[in-house]
Length: 445
Ligand code: UDX
Image (cartoon, rainbow, N blue to C red; front, top):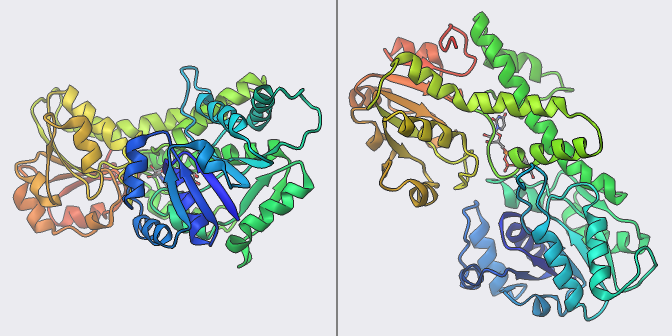
């Protein structure tokens, strides 16, 4: 089948590559000329395991191309996916400017019937707005049956770092669609992804839109919940890693997303939790539970700084080594990364910061070059350091050569923001280690 995907950001690009990999003919559309040039040369603007390889393979196979020209991208496409960004507006709501602008452009470029698929994460009610603005452009009356286009909601659940895997083998595909004929088309489009038993859930449009926010907000809640338990652990001498095992083995709870740490970051959770709070309040439903999730998360991000302040009251000009700048492992994305809170807090206190991250260095340098020292490998940032903060759970940081770490640092203190190390083990090696909720009153805050 033929489709175009408007927006070649994270979701749009991986979706386009995923559909092409499954044998569909895909045109990626983006108004960023440089991005389209780079993609057309087979270079991915983002780091995602396996992405560039599949990008090239499908371009060479003639199933994938990129253009800045929407009308050209749409020319032969039955489906037009909208996968542009929905950042938070100042009031916390999702800014639909880009989504609706693309919807209008699609309407202006219609050369025959099209299925317009909203892939961007958008608040409940947005697909209706897409329908409205398209009708406006086409001079069609609201609510009157028409055969120029249909609007479908099809949220994306991919995770950065395993985005391709998530797209190619989704747990489920959620499709919000009113027209049964279009439902069949969507099932056909997704057939290659769902052949192995992954379900397609067909539902009404509003439910599909809300599902995406509900899923993300629930996962964020799980993280803030375990972080709150970690605080209790620190105060009571319990160890959150044990509590997690004991809790998570109940199948109703489950182990994933129960890792205590320096909080969630990234492009989705912070933004979507905010937007859902806004949606609830706009509908007259207080969203206290999610406000608390946000508050706990903001506090988690401050923990490394609290520990540093406690160890060095009023101290300035410490050397702080940071391992990890990305918001999580396997990505170069630093949006809302917890590491940035530590980094900026240290700079504000007059400390010197030396940082290493396996993939996010380009993004970090673009923002902090000249103010932060960057290492080419993990140990380089340690020499003379007063404290080491582990803030992203990259595998390369899992089993350091602790003797080397100790020799390099001025004072062997580790703040383990992702609970990767056993504080007892480090203590036996003569290294002070402060985890998140590891008891031992290690980080009595
Ligand atoms: C998330 C959702 O998982 C995905 O389904 C949705 O489509 C987009 O948002 P992503 O932002 O890529 O994906 O990252 P995710 O793996 O969910 O992690 C989010 C943040 O939570 C990271 O900062 C991570 O470090 C943190 N996290 C995750 C924890 O602190 N503890 C955990 O147990 C799990």
